[in-house]
Every structure is written in C-alpha cells, then in structure tokens.
Amino acid sequence: MRTIVYFAIGILFGITMFKSEAASWFRIYEMFQFKAFHMYGIIGSALFCGAIITYLLKKFKAKSILDGSEIVIADKASGWKRYLFGGLFFGFGWAISGACPGPMFTTLGAGFYPILVVIATATFGTFCYGLLQKHLPH
Amino acid sequence: MIDYLLQPWPWYFSGPMIAFVLFLLLWTGKTFGMSSNLRTLCAALGAGKKVSFFQFDWKAQRWNLVVALGAVVGGYIAANFLSVSTAVAISESTIAQLNSMGIQDAGQAYMPASLFSLEAFSTPKSLLILSLGGFFVGFGARYAGGCTSGHAISGLSNFQLPSLIAVIGFFIGGLFVNHFLLPYLL
Image 1 (cartoon, each protein chain N blue to C red):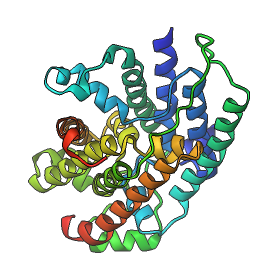
Image 2 (cartoon, rainbow over the protein chains, first blue to last red):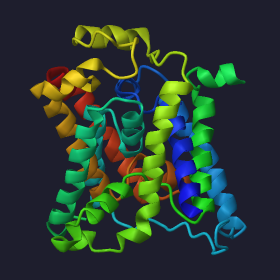
Image 3 (cartoon, rainbow over the protein chains, first blue to last red):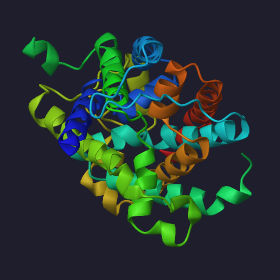
Image 4 (cartoon, helix red, strand yellow):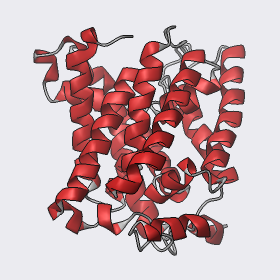
C-alpha cells in the first residue's frame, strides 16, 4: 500500500518535472543567463505555496495520513560552511549537467539515456562525500 | 483541459504542482528531498561496509527509491503520452547564443543532442561533461545536505537560514560555471 502511494507521488513528480521543463538542460542554462522568468516563476510560486503549506501543517500539528503520527518538519542543523561549500559544488554540477537529482530520473524515463552517466557519477560523488566527510569543513 | 495539459506547463501551474508534491510527501510523513535517494542507493549497493556515512538502515529509506522510480515512469508518461511537442521554447537570445556555441538544436528539442542523444555514449567530450556535472551534483548535494528540492523548496518554505545559504551557493557556483566555464566546455 505504502509502496503504491510513494510510487504514485513519484509519477506525479516526474510528470511535473518534465512538463514544467525544469528537467530541460536548456531551461537551466537559460536560468543562469537570466534570460527568462520561467524557472524563477516556478521556484518562486512553489516556494510561495510551499511556505503556506508548511506553516499550516505546523500550526495545526497535522498528523500523517498513513499512520497518524505527528508530522515533524525538522530544522536544518545550524552552521554555514557545509551549506556554502556544498552549495557551490552543487551549483557547478547543476550548471554543467543541467540536471538536479529529481529531474535526472525524469529525463531517464523520457528516454535521454546518457543521463545514466550523470546518475552513476552523481552516485559516485555521493559516495566520495561519504569517504571524505570527516576531512571536510562543516 | 486536456489540450492545456498537453502543452508545456506555465510556471504558475508548475510551481504550485511542485508544492503539491511537497504537501503529499509531508502529509504521508516524509520529506521532499530528491538527492537523499543517491545516499540510499549507495547504502543499498553496500557502501556501508566501507564508509560509516552509509551505515544506516537503508530499507527504512526504500520509499525514496520508490519515489525516484515513480519519477522515471512519470518522465516516460509525460514525454510519450502528455506532450504534443517536447521542444522547449527558450528565448530567442538564448537560442542565438547557444547556436553560436555550436548547439544547433536550441529551441527545437528538450535536451541538446550533443549531450543526450545515444551518440553521446561514444563521444569522449560528452561523457566528460556528463561525468563532471554528475559528480559535482552528487558530491555537492550531500555536502550541502540537500539539493534544489531539499533546500530551495523544502528548506526555504520552512524559512531555514542554512537553506538560504545553500541556495546562494547553488547560484554562485552555477553562475560561475555557466558564464565562465561552459563556453569553453561545450
């Protein structure tokens, strides 16, 4: 049952990523060139709605629909180094590959098979972070 | 309605739909963060035997692999059954600029063929670009503790300062590469 629910949410997410064109390399390129409002509109309106949703879920102490447990929206750990340095690396990769982790899976389904190289190397990059974690400033 | 859905979705429909996915994941007791599944994947492949960062009960995180699998199927459905055309109508000035950099299908395709057609598998330069991009996305997302979904959408929606710092990092890094590296790389 749970598997079906998450699978369905994933399908909706995949369709949204493809149809919004947020999964298109061209849109990411254009975003970093500030030559269209499209991506900023998507992120901005998602944030506007997301902030209202997050506020309401917290205010009414909403319970999970699946098991009735309280919904916990955790704060991020404080600090700045990991967020800034990690963010920079992520930005490098985002601009080069035009893909962030959600759209990677969407474009695979859409038939752009070389994205498999991106998924494989992103998994390897994640592994390398795990290896180096203790030596990096956080 | 169907005609509308078959066209590329405008930003003011797409953004709220992303927020709806965020809502569904929170409402089912989870979080909206797509890069976590790469960590789960590492753990599922046995990385926990060597590296403590991957020593956790990945089976409890199986749901995010299921979401990723759903995203693959969603991409297939959207590209094959929900699109009249998949050409991305980027601005004329972007098209002209990409053309001058040798990307001839700008404005006519969903992805540049030089990077995402099957020929890319046998083109060393394309493989290098894809690998470099993928590596930094995976490394950076985990270092920063999240990606576009986890920080830019979930975190900022919850007014988290760390997420704002991460998103500023995304854009500094992305702008730098886009303006100073990509013209030589492509």
